[in-house]
Length: 335
Image (tube, rainbow, N blue to C red; front, side, top):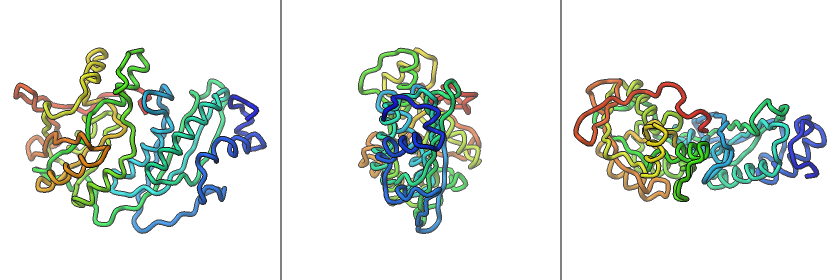
Protein backbone atom coordinates (compact mmCIF):
# COMPACT_ATOMS: atom_id res chain seq x y z
CA UNK A 1 0.00 0.00 0.00
CA UNK A 2 1.07 3.57 -0.62
CA UNK A 3 0.67 4.47 3.07
CA UNK A 4 2.89 2.71 5.59
CA UNK A 5 0.69 3.61 8.56
CA UNK A 6 -3.01 3.50 9.33
CA UNK A 7 -4.80 6.80 8.74
CA UNK A 8 -8.30 7.92 9.65
CA UNK A 9 -9.17 7.57 5.97
CA UNK A 10 -8.63 3.81 6.25
CA UNK A 11 -11.71 3.68 8.47
CA UNK A 12 -13.89 6.09 6.50
CA UNK A 13 -15.51 3.53 4.21
CA UNK A 14 -14.07 4.92 0.98
CA UNK A 15 -11.26 4.04 -1.39
CA UNK A 16 -8.58 3.70 1.29
CA UNK A 17 -10.81 1.45 3.37
CA UNK A 18 -11.33 -0.72 0.32
CA UNK A 19 -7.58 -0.85 -0.34
CA UNK A 20 -6.92 -1.89 3.26
CA UNK A 21 -9.40 -4.73 2.97
CA UNK A 22 -8.31 -5.91 -0.48
CA UNK A 23 -4.56 -5.62 0.03
CA UNK A 24 -4.08 -6.53 3.71
CA UNK A 25 -7.09 -8.27 5.27
CA UNK A 26 -8.85 -10.27 2.57
CA UNK A 27 -5.73 -11.97 1.16
CA UNK A 28 -5.19 -13.55 4.58
CA UNK A 29 -8.78 -14.31 5.58
CA UNK A 30 -10.17 -15.28 2.18
CA UNK A 31 -12.67 -18.15 1.95
CA UNK A 32 -15.91 -18.65 -0.03
CA UNK A 33 -18.16 -17.41 2.78
CA UNK A 34 -16.13 -14.27 3.51
CA UNK A 35 -15.53 -13.52 -0.15
CA UNK A 36 -19.27 -12.92 -0.60
CA UNK A 37 -18.63 -9.64 1.29
CA UNK A 38 -22.16 -9.41 2.66
CA UNK A 39 -22.99 -7.59 5.88
CA UNK A 40 -23.05 -10.99 7.55
CA UNK A 41 -22.33 -14.63 6.81
CA UNK A 42 -24.89 -17.37 6.17
CA UNK A 43 -23.60 -20.62 7.63
CA UNK A 44 -24.85 -24.17 8.11
CA UNK A 45 -24.77 -25.87 11.51
CA UNK A 46 -25.60 -29.45 12.40
CA UNK A 47 -27.57 -29.16 15.64
CA UNK A 48 -27.13 -27.51 19.02
CA UNK A 49 -24.76 -24.58 18.77
CA UNK A 50 -22.23 -22.98 21.13
CA UNK A 51 -21.56 -19.24 20.78
CA UNK A 52 -18.85 -17.14 22.41
CA UNK A 53 -17.13 -13.78 22.11
CA UNK A 54 -14.00 -12.19 23.57
CA UNK A 55 -11.86 -9.07 23.18
CA UNK A 56 -8.07 -8.81 23.17
CA UNK A 57 -6.02 -5.87 24.42
CA UNK A 58 -2.73 -7.57 25.31
CA UNK A 59 0.41 -5.49 25.82
CA UNK A 60 2.93 -5.90 24.24
CA UNK A 61 1.24 -6.79 20.94
CA UNK A 62 4.12 -9.08 19.93
CA UNK A 63 5.80 -11.48 22.35
CA UNK A 64 7.79 -14.69 22.35
CA UNK A 65 5.82 -17.31 20.46
CA UNK A 66 2.94 -15.16 19.31
CA UNK A 67 1.05 -11.91 19.01
CA UNK A 68 -2.41 -10.48 19.65
CA UNK A 69 -3.75 -12.16 16.50
CA UNK A 70 -2.76 -15.61 17.70
CA UNK A 71 -4.46 -14.95 21.03
CA UNK A 72 -7.64 -13.76 19.32
CA UNK A 73 -8.13 -16.88 17.21
CA UNK A 74 -6.95 -19.45 19.76
CA UNK A 75 -8.87 -17.81 22.59
CA UNK A 76 -12.21 -18.08 20.80
CA UNK A 77 -11.46 -21.58 19.47
CA UNK A 78 -10.63 -22.67 23.01
CA UNK A 79 -13.69 -21.07 24.59
CA UNK A 80 -15.88 -23.00 22.15
CA UNK A 81 -13.92 -26.19 22.75
CA UNK A 82 -14.44 -25.96 26.52
CA UNK A 83 -18.22 -26.05 25.97
CA UNK A 84 -17.91 -29.42 24.23
CA UNK A 85 -18.25 -27.91 20.77
CA UNK A 86 -16.41 -28.33 17.50
CA UNK A 87 -15.49 -24.74 16.46
CA UNK A 88 -16.66 -23.84 12.95
CA UNK A 89 -16.83 -20.12 12.23
CA UNK A 90 -15.26 -16.94 13.62
CA UNK A 91 -15.87 -13.22 13.19
CA UNK A 92 -13.09 -10.66 13.57
CA UNK A 93 -13.53 -7.03 14.58
CA UNK A 94 -10.51 -4.73 14.71
CA UNK A 95 -10.12 -1.28 16.20
CA UNK A 96 -7.00 0.33 14.76
CA UNK A 97 -5.27 3.44 16.04
CA UNK A 98 -4.23 6.16 13.63
CA UNK A 99 -0.50 5.72 13.01
CA UNK A 100 -0.43 1.94 13.52
CA UNK A 101 2.15 0.37 11.18
CA UNK A 102 0.50 -1.50 8.31
CA UNK A 103 3.44 -3.95 8.35
CA UNK A 104 2.43 -4.96 11.88
CA UNK A 105 -1.18 -5.36 10.79
CA UNK A 106 -0.04 -7.67 7.99
CA UNK A 107 1.89 -9.81 10.49
CA UNK A 108 -1.07 -10.03 12.83
CA UNK A 109 -3.51 -10.89 10.02
CA UNK A 110 -1.16 -13.56 8.70
CA UNK A 111 -0.86 -15.15 12.13
CA UNK A 112 -4.64 -15.18 12.44
CA UNK A 113 -4.84 -16.93 9.07
CA UNK A 114 -2.32 -19.56 10.21
CA UNK A 115 -4.12 -20.23 13.49
CA UNK A 116 -7.54 -20.44 11.85
CA UNK A 117 -6.15 -22.96 9.35
CA UNK A 118 -4.54 -24.99 12.13
CA UNK A 119 -7.79 -25.05 14.10
CA UNK A 120 -9.90 -25.82 11.03
CA UNK A 121 -12.15 -22.78 11.40
CA UNK A 122 -13.18 -20.14 8.86
CA UNK A 123 -13.18 -16.39 9.42
CA UNK A 124 -16.48 -15.53 7.77
CA UNK A 125 -17.29 -11.93 8.69
CA UNK A 126 -15.76 -8.92 10.38
CA UNK A 127 -15.38 -5.19 10.74
CA UNK A 128 -12.59 -2.62 10.98
CA UNK A 129 -12.68 0.79 12.62
CA UNK A 130 -9.99 3.47 12.98
CA UNK A 131 -9.77 5.88 15.93
CA UNK A 132 -7.63 8.98 16.38
CA UNK A 133 -4.06 8.77 17.55
CA UNK A 134 -3.96 8.38 21.32
CA UNK A 135 -7.51 6.98 21.54
CA UNK A 136 -6.41 3.32 21.49
CA UNK A 137 -3.17 1.39 21.83
CA UNK A 138 -2.26 0.26 18.34
CA UNK A 139 -4.86 -2.41 17.81
CA UNK A 140 -7.68 -4.04 19.76
CA UNK A 141 -9.37 -7.20 18.43
CA UNK A 142 -12.74 -8.76 19.13
CA UNK A 143 -13.55 -12.27 17.95
CA UNK A 144 -16.80 -14.19 18.19
CA UNK A 145 -17.25 -17.83 17.29
CA UNK A 146 -19.85 -20.54 16.85
CA UNK A 147 -19.49 -24.29 16.90
CA UNK A 148 -21.46 -27.53 16.86
CA UNK A 149 -22.00 -29.15 20.26
CA UNK A 150 -20.71 -32.73 20.16
CA UNK A 151 -23.75 -35.03 20.64
CA UNK A 152 -23.80 -36.78 23.99
CA UNK A 153 -21.76 -34.19 25.85
CA UNK A 154 -23.15 -32.13 28.73
CA UNK A 155 -20.45 -29.82 30.01
CA UNK A 156 -21.56 -28.08 33.22
CA UNK A 157 -20.23 -27.57 36.77
CA UNK A 158 -23.57 -29.01 37.93
CA UNK A 159 -22.27 -32.43 36.87
CA UNK A 160 -19.20 -32.29 39.11
CA UNK A 161 -19.35 -34.93 41.85
CA UNK A 162 -17.10 -35.92 44.78
CA UNK A 163 -14.54 -38.48 43.71
CA UNK A 164 -13.96 -37.00 40.26
CA UNK A 165 -10.35 -36.51 39.23
CA UNK A 166 -8.91 -33.21 38.05
CA UNK A 167 -6.59 -33.33 35.04
CA UNK A 168 -4.36 -30.54 33.71
CA UNK A 169 -2.96 -30.60 30.17
CA UNK A 170 0.53 -29.29 30.93
CA UNK A 171 2.85 -26.67 32.42
CA UNK A 172 1.19 -23.57 33.86
CA UNK A 173 2.17 -19.91 33.81
CA UNK A 174 4.17 -19.88 30.56
CA UNK A 175 2.02 -17.22 28.88
CA UNK A 176 1.93 -14.81 31.80
CA UNK A 177 5.65 -15.27 32.46
CA UNK A 178 6.37 -14.45 28.81
CA UNK A 179 4.29 -11.26 28.93
CA UNK A 180 5.75 -10.21 32.29
CA UNK A 181 9.31 -10.82 31.11
CA UNK A 182 8.65 -8.66 28.05
CA UNK A 183 7.26 -5.82 30.15
CA UNK A 184 9.97 -5.89 32.81
CA UNK A 185 12.99 -6.57 30.63
CA UNK A 186 13.65 -10.01 32.09
CA UNK A 187 15.59 -12.48 29.98
CA UNK A 188 14.10 -15.92 29.54
CA UNK A 189 15.52 -18.86 27.58
CA UNK A 190 14.08 -19.43 24.11
CA UNK A 191 12.24 -22.47 25.45
CA UNK A 192 9.91 -20.21 27.47
CA UNK A 193 7.24 -18.58 25.35
CA UNK A 194 3.49 -18.22 25.28
CA UNK A 195 1.63 -21.53 25.42
CA UNK A 196 -1.09 -20.07 23.16
CA UNK A 197 -2.51 -22.87 21.01
CA UNK A 198 -5.84 -24.12 19.59
CA UNK A 199 -7.04 -26.92 21.84
CA UNK A 200 -10.01 -28.21 19.83
CA UNK A 201 -8.21 -31.37 18.65
CA UNK A 202 -7.31 -32.14 22.26
CA UNK A 203 -10.78 -31.63 23.75
CA UNK A 204 -12.46 -33.51 20.93
CA UNK A 205 -10.24 -36.54 21.58
CA UNK A 206 -10.90 -36.32 25.31
CA UNK A 207 -14.66 -36.23 24.81
CA UNK A 208 -14.49 -39.15 22.39
CA UNK A 209 -12.80 -41.16 25.15
CA UNK A 210 -15.14 -39.94 27.90
CA UNK A 211 -18.34 -38.13 26.82
CA UNK A 212 -19.28 -37.85 30.51
CA UNK A 213 -16.48 -35.41 31.33
CA UNK A 214 -18.22 -32.96 33.65
CA UNK A 215 -16.27 -29.79 33.00
CA UNK A 216 -13.62 -28.50 30.62
CA UNK A 217 -12.10 -25.10 31.30
CA UNK A 218 -9.11 -23.13 30.04
CA UNK A 219 -7.34 -21.32 32.90
CA UNK A 220 -6.75 -17.91 31.32
CA UNK A 221 -7.06 -14.74 33.43
CA UNK A 222 -6.78 -15.69 37.10
CA UNK A 223 -5.11 -18.96 36.19
CA UNK A 224 -5.76 -22.36 37.70
CA UNK A 225 -6.78 -20.81 41.01
CA UNK A 226 -9.67 -18.86 39.47
CA UNK A 227 -10.99 -21.84 37.52
CA UNK A 228 -10.93 -24.21 40.50
CA UNK A 229 -12.65 -21.69 42.75
CA UNK A 230 -15.35 -21.07 40.15
CA UNK A 231 -16.03 -24.80 39.81
CA UNK A 232 -15.99 -25.40 43.57
CA UNK A 233 -18.53 -22.64 44.13
CA UNK A 234 -20.79 -23.64 41.24
CA UNK A 235 -20.78 -27.36 42.10
CA UNK A 236 -21.01 -26.93 45.89
CA UNK A 237 -18.13 -29.39 46.21
CA UNK A 238 -14.67 -29.14 47.70
CA UNK A 239 -11.49 -29.40 45.63
CA UNK A 240 -8.14 -30.66 46.84
CA UNK A 241 -5.02 -30.42 44.68
CA UNK A 242 -1.44 -31.53 45.32
CA UNK A 243 1.34 -28.95 45.24
CA UNK A 244 3.89 -31.53 44.13
CA UNK A 245 1.70 -32.50 41.15
CA UNK A 246 1.49 -28.98 39.69
CA UNK A 247 3.72 -28.68 36.60
CA UNK A 248 5.68 -25.41 36.71
CA UNK A 249 8.88 -24.83 34.75
CA UNK A 250 11.83 -23.65 36.89
CA UNK A 251 12.21 -20.55 34.70
CA UNK A 252 8.57 -19.61 35.22
CA UNK A 253 8.90 -20.17 38.96
CA UNK A 254 11.93 -17.89 38.84
CA UNK A 255 9.89 -15.08 37.26
CA UNK A 256 7.25 -15.60 39.95
CA UNK A 257 9.87 -15.42 42.70
CA UNK A 258 11.32 -12.18 41.29
CA UNK A 259 7.96 -10.44 40.81
CA UNK A 260 6.09 -11.95 43.76
CA UNK A 261 3.51 -14.08 41.94
CA UNK A 262 2.09 -17.54 42.57
CA UNK A 263 2.00 -19.72 39.39
CA UNK A 264 -1.50 -20.87 40.31
CA UNK A 265 -2.76 -17.35 39.57
CA UNK A 266 -0.94 -16.80 36.28
CA UNK A 267 -2.81 -16.77 32.98
CA UNK A 268 -2.45 -19.55 30.43
CA UNK A 269 -3.58 -19.49 26.80
CA UNK A 270 -3.10 -23.11 25.76
CA UNK A 271 -4.03 -25.25 28.73
CA UNK A 272 -7.10 -27.24 29.70
CA UNK A 273 -8.47 -28.42 33.04
CA UNK A 274 -10.86 -31.38 33.04
CA UNK A 275 -13.09 -32.84 35.74
CA UNK A 276 -13.34 -36.54 34.89
CA UNK A 277 -15.09 -39.55 36.47
CA UNK A 278 -12.46 -41.47 38.43
CA UNK A 279 -12.89 -44.65 36.37
CA UNK A 280 -12.16 -42.72 33.15
CA UNK A 281 -9.20 -40.68 34.41
CA UNK A 282 -6.43 -42.99 33.21
CA UNK A 283 -7.96 -43.35 29.75
CA UNK A 284 -8.46 -39.61 29.33
CA UNK A 285 -4.95 -38.91 30.60
CA UNK A 286 -3.56 -41.32 28.01
CA UNK A 287 -5.53 -39.62 25.23
CA UNK A 288 -4.31 -36.20 26.37
CA UNK A 289 -0.67 -37.29 26.37
CA UNK A 290 -1.03 -38.57 22.81
CA UNK A 291 -1.92 -35.05 21.63
CA UNK A 292 0.88 -32.49 21.15
CA UNK A 293 -1.04 -29.97 23.26
CA UNK A 294 -1.46 -32.44 26.12
CA UNK A 295 1.84 -34.34 26.13
CA UNK A 296 2.64 -33.10 29.65
CA UNK A 297 -0.83 -33.79 31.05
CA UNK A 298 -1.08 -34.86 34.67
CA UNK A 299 -3.45 -35.58 37.54
CA UNK A 300 -3.41 -32.65 39.97
CA UNK A 301 -6.21 -33.44 42.42
CA UNK A 302 -9.75 -34.55 43.08
CA UNK A 303 -13.21 -33.38 44.04
CA UNK A 304 -14.25 -33.93 47.66
CA UNK A 305 -17.42 -33.71 49.72
CA UNK A 306 -15.54 -31.80 52.42
CA UNK A 307 -15.24 -28.00 52.55
CA UNK A 308 -17.82 -27.33 49.80
CA UNK A 309 -17.05 -24.24 47.76
CA UNK A 310 -13.40 -24.18 48.79
CA UNK A 311 -10.12 -25.14 47.12
CA UNK A 312 -7.35 -26.66 49.20
CA UNK A 313 -3.70 -27.24 48.30
CA UNK A 314 -1.87 -30.15 49.93
CA UNK A 315 1.64 -28.81 50.43
CA UNK A 316 4.89 -30.67 50.04
CA UNK A 317 5.21 -31.02 53.81
CA UNK A 318 1.73 -32.47 54.23
CA UNK A 319 -0.27 -29.44 55.34
CA UNK A 320 -3.25 -27.95 53.54
CA UNK A 321 -3.64 -24.27 52.68
CA UNK A 322 -6.64 -22.55 51.14
CA UNK A 323 -6.32 -21.35 47.54
CA UNK A 324 -8.45 -18.23 47.37
CA UNK A 325 -10.08 -16.61 44.37
CA UNK A 326 -7.73 -13.96 42.92
CA UNK A 327 -8.34 -10.45 44.17
CA UNK A 328 -8.23 -7.82 41.45
CA UNK A 329 -6.27 -7.94 38.21
CA UNK A 330 -2.83 -9.33 39.03
CA UNK A 331 -1.45 -8.86 35.52
CA UNK A 332 -3.41 -6.24 33.54
CA UNK A 333 -3.86 -6.74 29.78
CA UNK A 334 -2.53 -10.28 29.77
CA UNK A 335 -4.72 -11.22 26.77
